[in-house]
Length: 208
Image (spheres, one colour):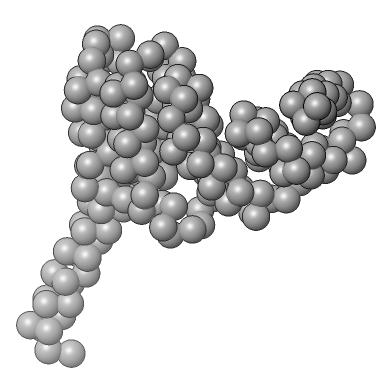
């Protein structure tokens, strides 16, 4: 083989190996490191703007490897933070921020923990509804829980999520259907049995 061709092949191979190492190892590792640093300094975050600025750095880092895991961690942080937020505008900003980064993952419709992803979004919207009483959040929660139900029809997290949604929306028929499924899978679930009795008694009282 021509020596010049050998050199070209060798150089090309070296460049390829460097690119693989850079995009496949260095960038993902750096992305994770930045995210960990963000989590460690989260006690310094005081405002929604601070939160978005801090978490956008690792989430926007130029590597998609590990993105789903980092988005999930961010969403879990929002899930916990919403418990202490009462301002409807702040609630909206946090929900929108989570859904912004989840959007491409949800559109893809798959992933190692896709069922967990849609459940987290359902919970975020359910909490947002409890904080604001805005129906759009309850509707979004139902949408995500239904997606989770499609992925795993017997998954308890999804079933209990839908149970809460239908209880809060007053959809007795849908509530009863999910409750029947829950009790068929877990007959000793006293909480669900009590909720069914409460819903039926409430419905009977209203119809009189």
